[in-house]
Image (cartoon, rainbow, N blue to C red; front, top):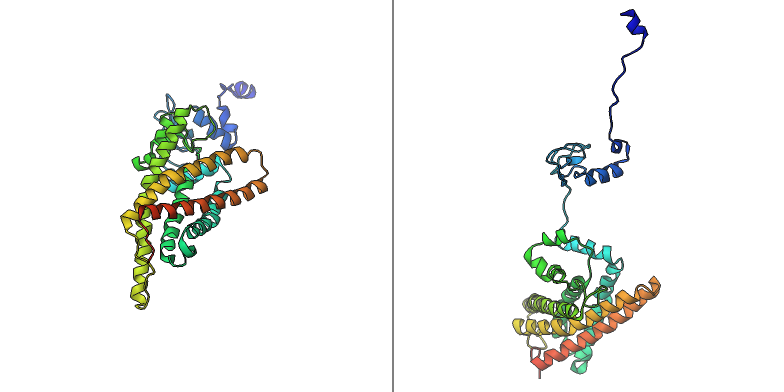
Length: 310
C-alpha cells in the first residue's frame, strides 16, 4: 500500500471537453446553432442538439437556464415590417418624415391650386383631402419600400398581410418593392409588380377614403352641433363616391408616380452625398405631392364627387 501511494495517483483517462465550451457566449451560440441547437431554443438539426446543452429532440434547457419555449416578445405586423424596411434602406425613416411633413403640405397646396379661388370657398373639401391624404402617403411609402425579410417569416404572415405585402410578388418571381427594384427581373415580372401594386393601392385607397371621408364629415357635423351658427361652405362629399375617387387616384396616378420615385431613389442614393440626397428628397417629394393634389382635385371634378357651392 505504501509503495502504491509513493508511486503517485493512478493515471486517469483524458476527458474530452467540447471546444465550444471555451468560446465566448456569442461564438458558443453560433456553434450550437450550427449543430442543430440554439441558446435556449429548439434544435433543428438531425439529432437536435437542443438549447445549446441538452440533446435529443432539441428541447433541453440552455446554459442560462431558459427553456426552449422561453423566447422574447415577438414584434409583428407594422413594427416588424418597419424594421425590415429600415434594414434594407437606412434612409427610409427620413423619406417617411419628409413625405408626411413636406409631402402632405405640398399635396394640400396642389389641391387648392386646382380649385377656383385657390379653394378658399372649399376648405371643408380640402380638409377631407388632408385627412385621407395623410393616411395614403404613409401607406404607399410603406408598401412600396423593399424589405430585408426572410421567406419563412413572410410565409407566417396572416393572409391579409401577404396580400397587401410582397409575399405573392416574390413567389411569382416579381420585384417585391417597386417595379424598378434592382435585380434580374424580366419586363413581364416588372409589369406584374406595377399592376399588382396598383390593385393593392386601389383597394387601400377605397377603404382609407371611407375612413377619412367619414372622419372629416363627422368632424364637420360635430362642429355644427357645438356651434349652431356654423354652416359648411359646400355639400359634404358622399363617402363611397369619394372613396371610389381615391381608389382610382391611388391605383393609377399615385402608383405610377411613386414607382418612378422609388426607382430614382435606388439609383441616386448610391452616387449622391447624404446631405444632397436628403435635399433632393425634400424637393422631389414636395413636387410629387403638388402634382398628386392637383390630379386628385381634377379627378374629383371630372367624376363629380366634390361639388363646390354655386
